[in-house]
Length: 151
Image 1 (cartoon, rainbow, N blue to C red):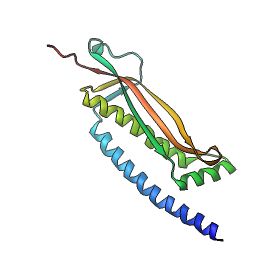
Image 2: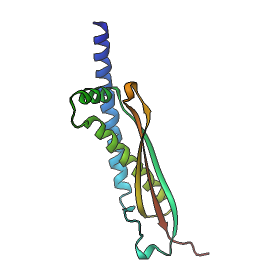
Image 3: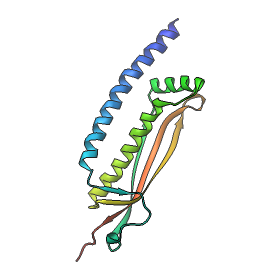
Image 4: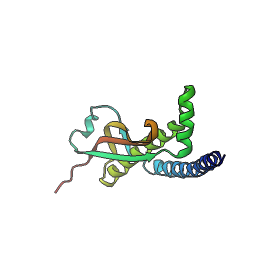
């Protein structure tokens, strides 16, 4: 009986604090997406012709996000019955958006307003019990173009 009460308390705490952290992170993401909306992302391997004479450099943005206890529990239940694991979808959405924002921020600091050939890599970097996802890393990378400095 004590174990069930502890489990329920942990689930409640995981839910409450996980939701608070997630909402805070989404607010930060939305605010920063507005700030860097002028940094253009192009998925094509080939830059537009007007960028050919500009300097280019590889830019990266990386983030590691951990799964909270509640989401891990819900995902475990979903694995029993099958179907969409929506508790992990928000985790991956936040991680992707954060990695892209970090990429844009780095490019912006270097004076670039255009990123070409953007790619995303995803990795599970830690495992919980029974090989459940513990945390994920998203790496975003692209080629940034910026005007050549004339001496």
